Amino acid sequence: MNVSLLILPLSCLAIGLCITSLALPYWRCGYFFSICLLSLMQLISVVLFCGGLFIICVVFITDVCGVCSDSWIPGQVCATFRVLFNALGVSAMMAGNILYAFIFIDSWSFILSLTGSVIAFHVVLLSLFTSRCLQSR
Image (cartoon, rainbow, N blue to C red; front, top):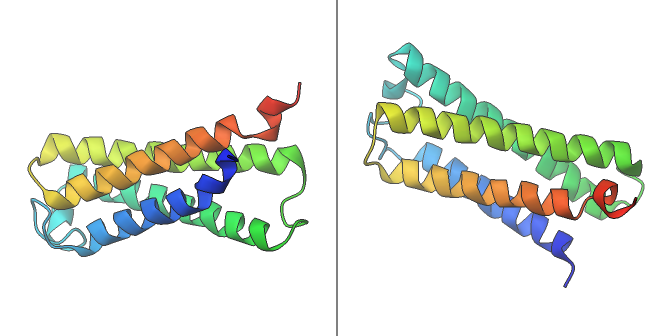
């Protein structure tokens, strides 16, 4: 089975879980975008998580466009940047989740966002292992 076929569905699942976690009011501090922005550490956590999610969404959109057109993303340079941006987005999301875990614990929304981040991390690993840069020597 071609592992690269898993990238789009897993990316879609990860983004969906993360957006759902942001919409739910079950964070320890309440709603993520209202009450959770009271301190600097909470604001940094929100910015890291949302920034990482935005980067992953941009990479996902380019992947979808790449499926629709063969000439959308040419060459190994663009594939390398795609993997790097995906890794950067996942790193920011994980950093935001870890920072949130230090501030608040015991939250279902945190578990959903962490699950989405972990799935996105696996997407990065799949992208890395199926990259043309690593396959061609």
